[in-house]
Length: 195
Image (cartoon, rainbow, N blue to C red; front, side):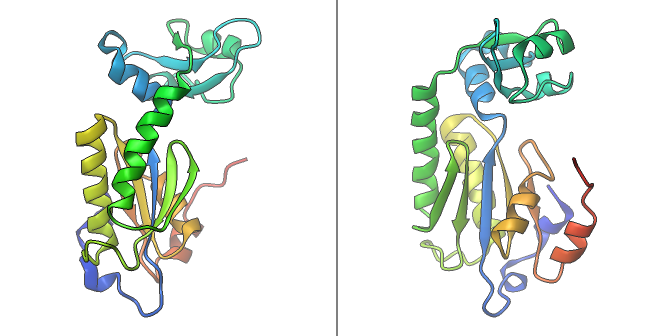
């Protein structure tokens, strides 16, 4: 957890600012495959086509250590990680799990903006449970996702979607990062520049 996690709701309630959570499932497709096949847990896994012009759709964190990334040609992925285990995508399963996760989101807010099967923005400015703290809501959602799906999610909490999305990448996997009003500019300025 980030050092920002231990602050409470009153620090999040700046006048007129929204409370946004960006939830991003960790290596979603690969994690579902590892969950469903215990024999490949802890091993480098790629979801995608393994032959010819195959492309990696998702890579487990164990595969990422070797430099394997999504959208990478499978032939290059195998050169980087000769022991890479390929699984064919099971989109119907991923959609089902995604619906399970979305149902959890909807317990807290009707304002859910899915970006893909594995990530979404939630506006919890006025949450349905009256919790008030976006940080506490994010913690609760992550706990429920883990309990209900045996998968981990990372979350970013902030006052706009842009910062929340950047924050969700900070403590992956299974992490939480909170950027409060007044911290956004310094947070963005401190991020590494990527090509």
